[in-house]
Length: 555
Image 1 (tube, one colour):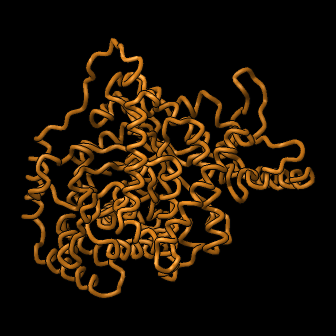
Image 2 (cartoon, helix red, strand yellow):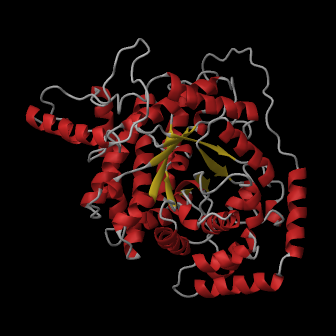
Image 3 (spheres, rainbow, N blue to C red):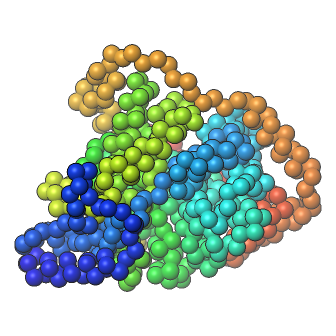
C-alpha cells in the first residue's frame, strides 16, 4: 500500500478516534513518555490492507478506534458451586472486589437437563457448578444483584433455552423490564457434538430451539446475546489453535445460516452472536489467533452472507485462560501461566476475560485462589499500561506472519467442511462431520500428537517433565459437602408440594403442543417456568417428544 493510501487510512482512523468517548487517564509509559493511541507504518507497507486500522474493516486490529482507551475489557469471572445461595455469596464477593460482570458455572445435572433428585444426578449436585432446578433457584442466585444493571453470561448449551427462561422470569420477579437484560447465553450445540458432549436431543430439535431463541431475543431482548460460539471446549479437548479457530468460526457461520433461514435480518441478528475462545500458553500464537478470527469473520459476514454494517461484521469474543494448561504438580506455577495467557488475550483484543484460579485443576476455586485470579486481571489492567495503545503488536513481522498462517489454515479447513456437505452450506458440512465423527477424530489426532511430544520430552512443562524438584505443600481446596445435595433435594420436594401441580401439567402440555408445530417455543416455556416447572420436567417432556441422541460408537 502506497504512502498516500496509508495517510488516508490514518486520517479515517483519526476522525473516528476523535469522535469516540475515551477514559480519563494519562496515557504514558511508566517513565513518563507520552504514547500515541495507535502506531502504523510511516512509509509504504504492502501489508496494511490486510492489517488495517483499529475500528476499521477487516478489524484485524480491533473493533474500536480507541482500543482499550475507550473501555477496558470486562472482567467476567466464571463461578458457581453448591447451591444458589452459596454461589450468590461468591458473586457478591467478585462484584465487590471489582468484577465487572458475572459468568455462571452450572453443575453436571443442570448441564444435562436433569433435576437434582434424578437418580442420574446422584453424587454430582453442586460439585462442578451451581445446581439450578427451577426459577426459584434463579431468584436466589441473583438475590440482591440487579439484573437490569449487571451483564450475566451463562455457560450452558443443551438445556440453555429453559435456563434462559428461568433467568427471564427471575428478572421479571425483580421488576426488571425484559428489554433491559444484557448478557450472553452459550447455547452452542454444535461444539457439544464436536467436543464437550453435553447434548439432549439430535441436532435438529436443538437447532429449532436455537432459532426460536434468536427470534425471541431479536424482538424482545435486543441487547442480550443468545449465542456464544465456543472454541474454548474444542481447544480444551486437544485441538490445535488452527482447529479451534476454524471449527469455532465454521460453527458461527452455521448459526448465521440458521438465522437467515428464519428470515431474520443479518444486520439485526448478527450483532447478537458472540464468541468464546481459549487463551493457551503459546503467547504469540494466541494473539495471532484472535486477530485472525476478527479478520476472517468480518470478511465472511460481508462477502459470503451480505452483512453491510460494521456491527454486523464485528466478532466480539470472551476469553478464558486455558484450564488444560494448569498442572496439579507445583500448582503455584499456574498463577504465572494464567498471567501469560491473560496478557495474550488482552494483546489480542478480547472484549471480556476470565482468569483461571491456581487450584482449578484440582477442584472448584477456593475464595483466596479466586481473588488471586481476579487480581491477575487487575494488575494487567491497572499497572502494565498495555491499555494505552490499540493492537500494540500490529505490524510485528512475527505476529503478522502467524496471523496470516492461521487464517490460511482456517480457510483450508472451511473448504473441507463445506465439501463434506450435500449442498455447499457450512451447516450441511458440520452436520455431516458430526455424523461421521470427523471433528472428533481430528481433535483426537491433535491431542495424541501433543501427548506423544510431551512424553518424549519434546514439549516441556515445568513441574511435570522438567524442573520437578519442589518445596510445595498440599493445597487446601474447596470441597462441596454432600449435605448440599441432600438439602437441594429437600427444598425441591417442598417446592413441588407447594406449587399448583395442575398448572404445571397444563403448562408442560401446552409447551409440548407447540413443539409439535412450528410456533416459537419460548413463550410456552416461559409459562411453564413461571408456574415452577423444573428444568428436568421441561427437558423430559421434550425428550419424550423428540427422543434423545446417543453418539454412535466409533473406533
